[in-house]
Length: 279
Picture: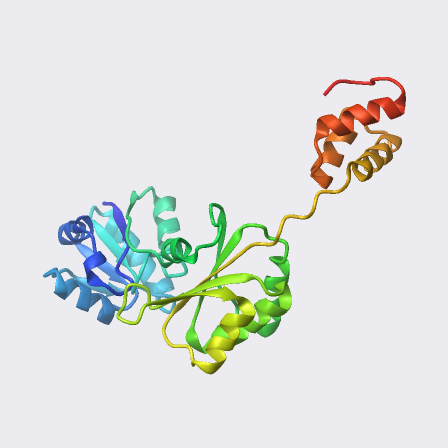
C-alpha cells in the first residue's frame, strides 16, 4: 500500500528513470497535478493506469479518497508536471496524511530544478537554502527579502517569467548588487543559464523579455569583517562586569566578533588579575 513520490522530467523525457517507469507500471492508480500533462508522459512510456487529478483546488475533496485507497491495500503514485512532488508543487498534505494513517511513502528520485540550478550557478553553494516562489504581494515579497538580507548561504528561488523583472528589482533594492545565476527552461530546447550581478541580469531581461520558467541562485551575504581583538576584549570585559564568568564572557565575545575565544580569554584573565575559571 505504499504511496510513491516520483520525480518527473523538467522537459527532456530522456531524464525519466527506468525505476520510475517500472514503479508506475506496478501501481494501481496515479494521482497527477495535471492529468493532461501526465498523460503525455505516460503515453510516451506505454503506461496505462487509472489517472486522477490531485492539485490545490481539489485537494480537500480528493485527498481522503486517495488515502482510503492506499489504506485498503492499493499502491499509488503521485506525479507533478515537472520535478519532485511537494517541492513547490502539490503533495505535502498527501504525504502528511499518509504519515497520519501509517501509510508508507517512498520517493523515486528524479529531476529537480533546485539541484540542477545550483550545479550550474558557479557560486559557492556547498550550503544553500531553498525559498521557492516569492509572494505576488509587493509588501509580503519585500518583507521576505528583507528577512533574508543577512542570510550567508546561497539562496534558490523559483520565478515565473511575468514576475521576473520585479523580483530582480526588489532583490537589488533589498540586498545590493550581488552575484546571481539565472537558469531557464532547464533540459529543454532553449535552456539557458546567465551569470552576473543582479543589475547586469536585470538589464538583460529588461531588453530581452523573459520567457520560460526560471530558477535563480543568489549568493549569500558576505561574512562580517572580524572585529579587532581589542574590541573583542572590551566586549568581554563588559560581559564580565555584568556578572558572567570569564569563560562565558570570552565565549560570547568570540561568537559575536569572530575572534578566537582562547585569545580573548587569555587577555581577559590578565585584565582581571587572576584566572576565575577555565575554558
